[in-house]
Amino acid sequence: MPQAGFDTAWEHASAVPGWCTREQAHALWKAASKLGPGSSVLEIGSHKGRSTMVLGEAMRTAGGKVYAVDPFIEGRLFGGQSTRVTFEENIAGADLSDVVELCSDYSTKLRPHWHEPIDLLYVDGKHDYWTCADDFRWGVHLPENGEMLVHDAYSSVGVTLSILVNVFGSRDWVYVERTGSLALFRRARPTTADRLRVLAEMPWWIRNVMVKVLLRLRLKPLTRLLGHSGSVDPY
Ligand SMILES: C[S@@+](CC[C@H](N)C(=O)[O-])C[C@H]1O[C@@H](n2cnc3c(N)ncnc32)[C@H](O)[C@@H]1O
Image 1 (cartoon, rainbow, N blue to C red):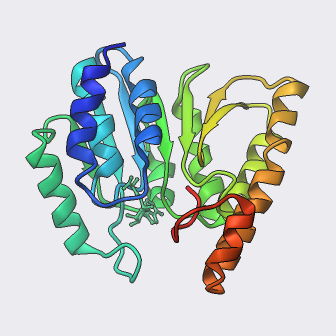
Image 2 (tube, rainbow, N blue to C red):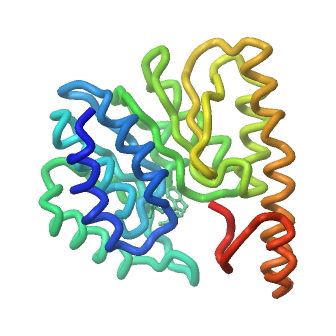
């Protein structure tokens, strides 16, 4: 797989504020680059386009497209219509307007009416249990062995509970690996060993929740005892 494609993608994407690290962007790019011509990626939660641009560059090379699903809701954390304008400028600036199709809606509202096949699913939208659980249901549109990447896995409480209920307890998902909090799942029948790998991440999840609580209590020095550095949440 040519690394040069990723370096170009990251050069553009890293200039856009967001939460996706370089290693995680590489994992997204690698998953998308495996797809063939005519295939599609569906991203839930695009914000200013940092991860969308990485997926878009990979799909331009593959000859496919990216559906970017985001309602651009007003709010302190994410911004609303001004974020949408920035997203569109970033996509156009990277010459990805022909590759990325914006679906400006809530993933949960769009899902029941969706009929297109998708080849890769990236979940990074609302992180509460119910929305995340619903977002995993987009997986029915993936082919057998199709991949789903989930950001803030084993980091956010809502996302992790959703994994416990809808992946650990399901017959449809195999947990493969994670890059920080970016977890990779494959649509296939899990073995007992596959299920146990989900449970093996629980100590890391508890550690991450403790780090987040300490950061909000302004006890940053104590997070160092848990191996955390810096003042941002563990991603
Ligand atoms: C963490 S940000 C996404 C970051 C982005 N993937 C990146 O790498 O920069 C979460 C985004 O999810 C969007 N969002 C919130 N609820 C959503 C929903 N129900 N469906 C789709 N997107 C949602 C927010 O508007 C926000 O832009």
